[in-house]
Length: 304
Length: 311
Image (cartoon, rainbow over all chains, first blue to last red; front, side, top):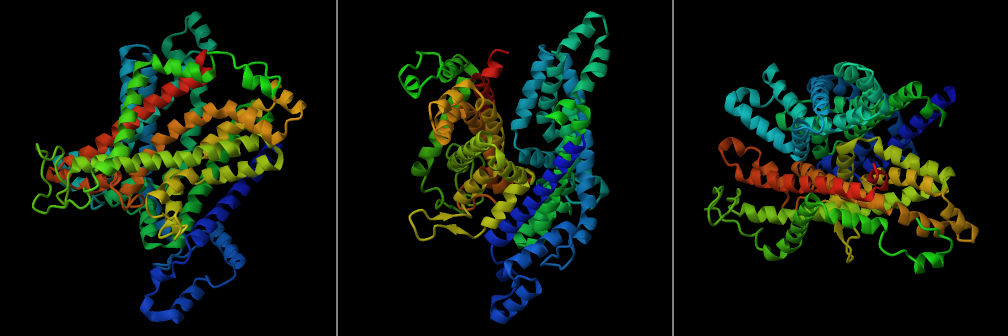
């Protein structure tokens, strides 16, 4: 077990290093020079040089890469636009993103679980078929359509709730949209997992000895489904802090996703770098957690 | 598989009829849902090919006396903010969508298959390096990965001045970005499958008569993982269509061509004013193509995956 943990830790560190390398290559090398976006061309070469010197862009590439790694690890990158540190910005904005995504994740998970248990319970009846049909249709509707139609519906009912964060209650609409839009895919996924377990031998044994169906479903089946479901939940964590890019932009919620999109248009490299790195870091940590959990619960994985 | 004793036998004595591929085709042909979906995909592809020639005048057909007209006999789906036909725009956008999705997968699937097969077959440090490469790529989640590479591509032109000139702000940039960023899934599956195939008797047989490692990989391993490539092509296609719509909506996708994402973007505030047609056309077109790919992809996977077949 110790060797397994050490091996996974080394892999995780290497992946994080890879992400630093990748962000450096993408945003510093491929994207090239952004000086022209920040210094008025009329000011001429000296002003450009001064700006580049101030942000350390005139140093050799290995020094820049070293600073890039430092800034990544400590999340101390400074915005070109506002000169704010990333940690300050995250503290200001992460709350808005979490206010949107956390209830969205919890509500989405609960409703998907309830519906998929229900549908799986009635498998091969018209309820099941209707459920599958609706979830496939729901998956195929573009997310943008949910968002725009949701806003339109609410606008017709109660206009002030349809946009922006002027009122605290305006967060309910984006949350509802993210729950409903995600429902189709989740129900389909969970239904498959549950049905996979229901067709196992131990369920037949439990039924044969006369256990009631609810006991079978909740005590045996759900417990065995927990690992993939837990994985699915943990892997949703990286998306929590970034919020939903599209929802935040559309509803004017000043979270981190909205910041990422506006930083792209402003070409604010340190912010884009920092946010990309942060998401990747949380992803790697989540993945590591799932792997270790699997290692604890499933000896086959630990030993292979 | 047959007893693959020598290369010549494989070439000459292919047993008639029942290969994985002919079985899959037969199975799909008997499946009405799959055939309907395939027909719809063909219609989209045909529209995508024909529309740019037939409707080349659309971009310049602005008519400011005619803006935001509701659907009528002349304009089946009404007109947009410049007085141009929304119906024609929807057809033209099919070209953008299908081109981007097709090219993205033409890049991603072979890349993933080759890297996956090399990693799985050679093992050792080659494997470690490729696994590190795709773990790194995959650790930047979903749309952020695409946004990041589109940012890096902004304002760039590839092979400027040559015949191959590609504007990375336009369609080419979008499918290159999608292609370079979405080979990971294929690579993972192909790598796992290759590691299994490598140990099978026919690979050993090929190696034992002196076939080189790379030739064995190309001739004996890759053909046996090709079905994974086909399945991932169909899965990737619908993924790329929705990615194109989302990115174009955000202003990070195509800028120089009609796109369903851009139509949704320009129609997003129109709903409130009762102008539903532009939005409905774009959403409807996206919904149908994603739905049919979804169903067709599922059926294709069932038909091509021998492990699911007997279940």
